[in-house]
Picture (cartoon, helix red, strand yellow):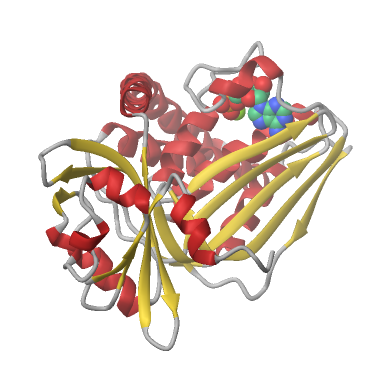
Length: 351
Ligand SMILES: Nc1ncnc2c1ncn2[C@@H]1O[C@H](COP(=O)(O)OP(=O)(O)O)[C@@H](O)[C@H]1O
Ligand SMILES: [Mg+2]
């Protein structure tokens, strides 16, 4: 290794590397960057970063911000217009280098434009379809739900006190569902984000599912007590996690273990955005695992492995989690399924 020079490694990389100082003046670039920008190193070194291209979709402020916060960022599918007006799509990854004097390391990778765009377009069309479908269904649910709520209320008045618990539950849940339906219907409605403890949300879910939990299924909790409160709409997150936990219960049939784990995570990139602090909620079960044929499209609406399923649970869960700038993914094999929900602690409201 001793004969290998750091610089010679950089010189041979296919990824374009540019290093800038705090004034955003270029201190170094590798040959790949020369190739990409069609400018010589002689022309670039010493020049201001913004003078070596015509336009970059990641703003100058983002770079300046990186120096201030000492945090990097990634910008996937950024548009770079070179000085010769060629437009290229790049994945940009920026990390601070903390030496005696701070620098930023820019890694710029040109992506196969056609492929990425068509994949993106396809995903967008599918997501739009999914959203329309969810809205359509929400509409269908709304009216009968009103009837159900009214009937439960009438029944509630006639029941003796010790049976009222059940009608109370129906009404509460109908109200919650109605709230959700309203949100799924209403375009760009603001939801109520405020600081909440995730364990309270989880305990509420455990309480809800315990009413019909088969005796052979055990729910174990492994909570991180140091977890910070997070900015969420608690009803939406309750709905999202409930959908995942209900799937686990259904997958187990009558027998098995579910484990709910919470953890703090640092420095995560979610959908290209770096977050300093996030929480992770893992829902594990030792059931049969997710059927192979569902894996690719698991989060799409109408994808279900159950005869009586709607295939909406995970699609709704994903939408709600994404509205919190979070992400949900899974690992699954027979005997072990893990859903992993990550939500940044602080995030701007979306929509
Ligand atoms: N923990 C799990 N273990 C095994 N399969 C699962 C699990 N979670 C989800 N699935 C599969 O994913 C499918 C889709 O789930 P979902 O979107 O909630 O719709 P639904 O529950 O109505 O089928 C389920 O039908 C099931 O086949
Ligand atoms: Mg479900």
